[in-house]
Length: 342
Ligand SMILES: O=C(O)CCC(=O)C(=O)O
Ligand SMILES: [Fe+2]
Picture 1 (cartoon, rainbow, N blue to C red):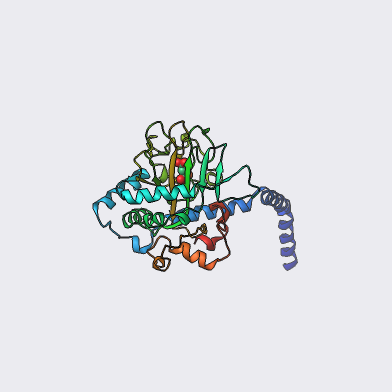
Picture 2: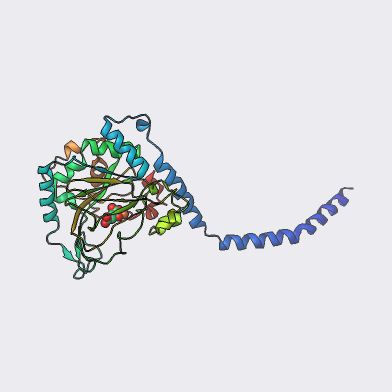
């Protein structure tokens, strides 16, 4: 009896063996062709996208302190871009303009530089000047970026404390070709954050103003769209009820806050030279440029968690030899280093 049973068992195994063999072959082929690394990155991306939008406890029920803040946050939430006027006094504007001039002096012509990275440069072909270390030149810029009203709008929009992680002074001269760098439709591939653009000169129709597709900041881009973040406006078709474009025009001293998760584009025209400071606020902890501060700034007073420079100062203290460049250049670069963004 028992030997019969054994025989029956053996028989059925033998019957299924070809199927197991085929399944093993198919499995091996699937493992070989599947890019697990990519699958892992896509999953991490999915998690991080949602995590970043999760409010911190202290912001869950936080209310705006006045109606100007409330209104600005509502516009930013709804459209992804809002103009703040009247936050910068005439004296502060004059100081910012003076400091911008200093930041734009002595910049290295990118053609003559042999270094891979220069923080203060002039690109004669694309016709712009940039400093990636602008706070160094401007105590006033540090103070504007710590403005209570501005910080409150940023934080209530993010529903987390927003910290400064990068800034640039950017002068675009007329007559450059459109369609390179930031002068084409793109999102910044940093999830939900706030860019603060401070206009140092009047910008009107015909000048070089930034454009932004209203509402596009709400789109959750896939990993693929982070790896390739230059997207056409048609990408928004079907994702938004209509494509409506905001123009970042205004008077010297106006500030635009926008969420660069939305589609936006710098525009190069023959209109006037545009001078702007652009400062990025985020709750993401993976990305800090080791920017310098002028001596006059009281760093000790900035060492509290409500100050938007607090994490940058902590980062500089923890990495005294890190220099200006960030540890990871992008969201995609830091994705696998979970501790850096969690
Ligand atoms: O207005 C511009 O030149 C583009 C700005 C931009 O792309 C940004 O701040 O992320
Ligand atoms: Fe951008």
